[in-house]
Amino acid sequence: MADKLGIFVSSDQNLGHLIGVCRAAKKAGKEVKVFLTNRGVLLTQQERFPELEGEAHVALCNVNFEAFKLQKPVPVVDEKDFATQMRHAEIIEWCDRYIVL
Image (tube, rainbow, N blue to C red; front, side, top):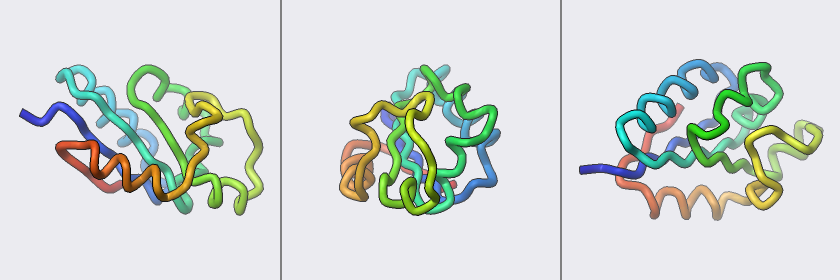
C-alpha cells in the first residue's frame, strides 16, 4: 500500500484542490509532501494557504519565490523549506505515489 504521497505544484490556480487532496490523503493515513515551483509559489499569498498546516509538509523553490519578489515569513513553510529543485528530486525519490497539479 502506498503510504507516501508527493505533490508537485507549478500553477497558482488549484489551491482548493490541493487542500482537498492533502486532507483526503492524511485522512487515509498517508504522509504528504508538497513542492511548489514556478507560479505555484504564488499560492503562499492566498488567504486559504494556511489551511495546509498539519495536512502536508510544504517546501518551495526559493528561486521562484524570490523572482516573484514575495516576502517571508510564510505560514506553513519553515525557513529550511525554502529550497532548490533538489528538494523536489528528494520528494520524488521519497514518495510511493506522485501527482502534479
